[in-house]
Image (cartoon, rainbow, N blue to C red; front, side, top):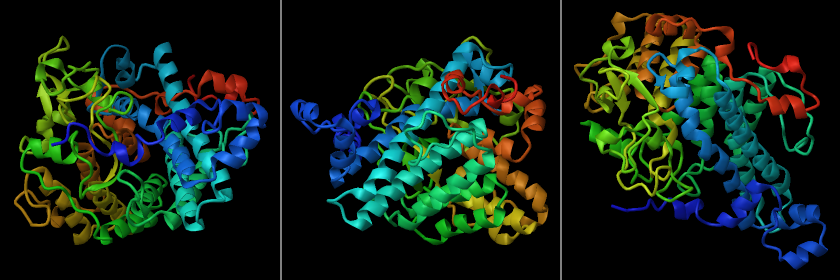
Length: 493
């Protein structure tokens, strides 16, 4: 067992000073002496010297990850409080009550916006400058630019789902303060363009653990196509991942297998991982979601926990869940003042975290389970017909959740004869709901399928107003971006 995951030596620990210099955007040529910088034109130093070597390009790519990794825990927590099963405590109750954001939560939403755009700007630096690198082979430049476009596409995908139309800032207009609000269709077109380029150039196997491969690009494309209702395209991309034979579901026989072998703090990677944001037990490089979710009484996190997000055993979602499903056991019933039926998640655990923001658990973006479930849904929607193949890939995920071998038929299998295309899609969506708790998937599933209003009303008894489907565009964006108008603000804000 390793006290500190060695993933940090692959691409998070090296060149930290350079990474921080890019993030600050004050100067990007830290390798030049102060005296030399006084003699050179700063813009020329940044453009002509910093992006020339493989080491410098790697530092620039690492800077794309930092804001996205830093805010991912909060992003997931907020998304899952919007769901039928999720709740937020204190000021976070606004997220699940659909009563509108308070001023503090509006500021937090602006923080998420800023993190995405900081990653996008750092990606733009690489996309613009890497092709001019004089000391790097063209094939390596293509891979680096592909990685930057993958991450930029991911950032815009999260932005368009959270805010709808947003300004498109690219390598072509990155220095312009003013950028008009693009339509959601324009943003999606841009995302697909970036991801198709990434798919062309990303490698079959990661250069370092934690970097994206061609299969990560295919998964992200499958997800984008699914959100757009392009079901045949989503099916085909998910199928390419499945037929690569590079991934398998991690077998589980108890909740400890899930906690340690799928989401554990010591885990470098697994047969199921397609792409994750990597963390390590070091201050500034660890995972914050454990502190947000855990309760001190469980002893599962050595810094206690804020138990700011939770569920409830009286919630219909939980009540109708099969008690033999191992995933249901990833909740502890703890009364901390909100009632005896309050549930606290124990999906992510770490007793050796460096500090309360320094847990070693990674946050999955795409797992093989999602490739199977996207295929099952998309294939059925594309043909409006339920096939034995679609049922089988769903059953693989379902079997694993009950401790059975995913590849062997079991007593918990669903039968094709019991479902038509429509009821099967509902079954897949429910399986996704169980499988991806605190992975930030459920709210977007409810939105894209048009089921959010009916589901939230049925389970929580709350009517969703129009403004609750989108987050507010930050006031500072509207005030400083001359191409944005007051009416560009999302409805209700």
